[in-house]
Length: 413
Image (cartoon, rainbow, N blue to C red):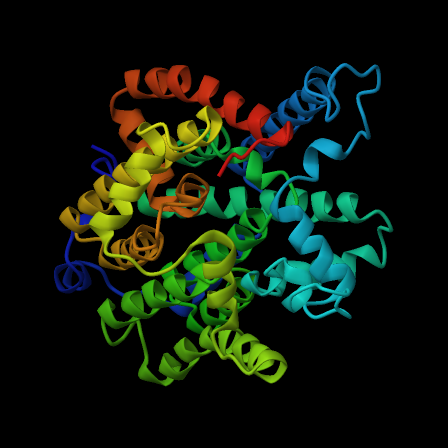
């Protein structure tokens, strides 16, 4: 099972582990931090994998543009960047360019009727800043995701090495991650890459007991996605489960910092609309993210997937939603069995949030944020090499389907 090949120390309960490990000296900690700032051979391999997969995706985007033009029976493939300008990108662009509440058009609803309040401001604010240097909006968004993705994969590899003693687990984890079915969203103007570029270093800082840094990075991640609050809960639980010597109580106030971006955004929306939860209500209006009991959400999604209520393309994606939920539940069970309480809290809160709406939406995309999944699969494959072969053979075509689906303008979660 995933995570079963983790270092034995990671499977020990907190108190037992504390008895067997002495806190590192400041000199040793400083030496490790200094060494961690230099790219190791494993890090260079990770960046090489990252560049190769970006090249693969750009080639796919080019071919998709010619094979599936926006206008049928045309001799023009359309703009070069058109494949990257799909779905949620329009919301981020409108927020960055016009703000959340531009002058309404005659007959238009709140915020132009596009429910843009549902999207947190971190990515649009950065997009607007980069746009001052890179005039083309889409290029600016792609540049953000490209740079953020590189930071994210480096942090993911280092987290994987923290959990296991095997040096090769880092590149293996990144390989599984970059070939995952929804990896296309790391390369487009979406929030996944930026969130991970903040959340994964935050978690790495928490693992190294740098609590102020972990809290600050988690706060920045929360400005990008509401998932940052789930990460904050995991960081706080990790803090509370550490021995007193490793988690001085004077660092406790830092753990409240990640709530600040969400509070400020809610305050801004209340000042504009009179509604503290305007972002949540925008999600309900636009995407039916109302609260429902978990079994009701499963039932509605099942009918959307298999009861021929939706067009075939949408039906297939709802099937992927169900499968992703099953994978998440299995992952949560493994984490709890291995007593990885903090990681389990993060995954559990994520599943509760996504699994209690009217129907499942964006769960496959959310798997990109489940770093224990990719580390666990990589660690498992080191013990059983056939797992790597099976994963690549099954996932590679699914990833290609997701790429073509999104880049051709069809719904891909």
